[in-house]
Image 1 (cartoon, rainbow, N blue to C red):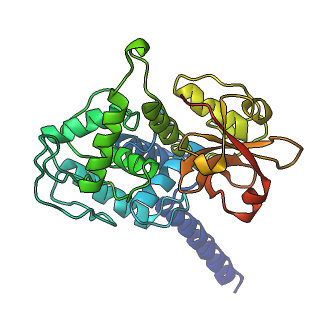
Image 2: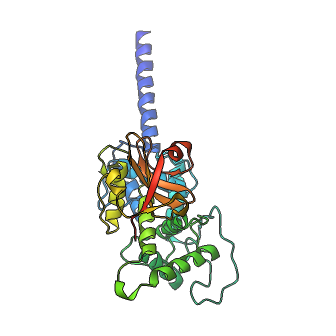
Image 3: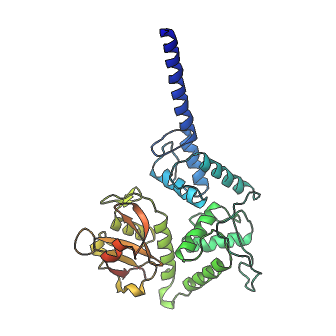
Length: 330
C-alpha cells in the first residue's frame, strides 16, 4: 500500500513538472529567460517591432512593448504575453514577408480608385507589394521621420506598414497601414508644406516636418512605465518624456513641466495644433503635468497611473485641470 502511494506521488510530481514545462514552452512573458526569448526578439527585430542593437535571452519591458505593438497590429489581445495565437500570427507575418502569397487583410482598407493623373503614386500600395513606387513611399516616410531605416527597399513590409500607420494616426485619418487615395493626398500635401522653405532659412527643417517627427516619436513609446524623475525609455515622468522626445528630434528644452510652461508662445485652447504642449495643474499649484497634443482633442503624456498613453482632453480629470498650452515647435 505504501509503495503504491509512493509511486502515485512520483507520477503526480512528474505530471506537475511536465505541465509546467509545457506551459513555459507555450507562453513567454515578462521576466522569463531562455533561447525562446532570444528567438522571439530576433523575429520582432527583423519585423521592425524591437529597436535594440543586440538581442538577449531576457523578456523585459522592451520585449513586452514590442509584443504588445505586434499584437495590436494583428488584431490580437494586446496583453504582452507571447502565446500560441501570437506565435501563429508571427509565423504568418514572417511567411508573408518571405513571399507575397499570404497577405493579411487590412482592417479598414482604403477603397481603390482609378489611377489619377498625377505621376506620383498612381496605384494603391499595400503589404507585401513590391516596386519602385514602394521605395519612393519609403523615402518620403523616412524624410518625414516616420520610417527609421538606413536603406530603403522596394518591398512593402511590416516596417513600412507601421510607419504608414504612424503617419495616418498623426494626420488624423483612417489607420489601416495601406496607401490609398486619402493617405496619398495627405502625404503629398504634407510633403508640399515641408518643401516650401523660406530663402533666409537655408536647410532648416520646416515646422510641419518637425511636428510629424515629434508626434511619431512620441507615439513610439506608448506603454513605457512611469517613474518620478524618469527621463529614458526605461521609465519616464511627464516632463522627462517631453524633454526626451524633443531631444530625439534635435530640439532642447528645459526639464520640468513648470519651466516648459514658460517656453515658446502661448496658444488658446481653440487654436491648438498638433505638436503643441498642453499643461495641467495636478498635484501642486501651477503647471505640474505636461503632454503633447495630437489633434482630435487627444494628447500623449507619461501618466503616473498608466505610463505613456494617449488621453482625451475632454476627459473630466484632465478637462478640469487644464491650464494652458504653449507652441514650442517652430
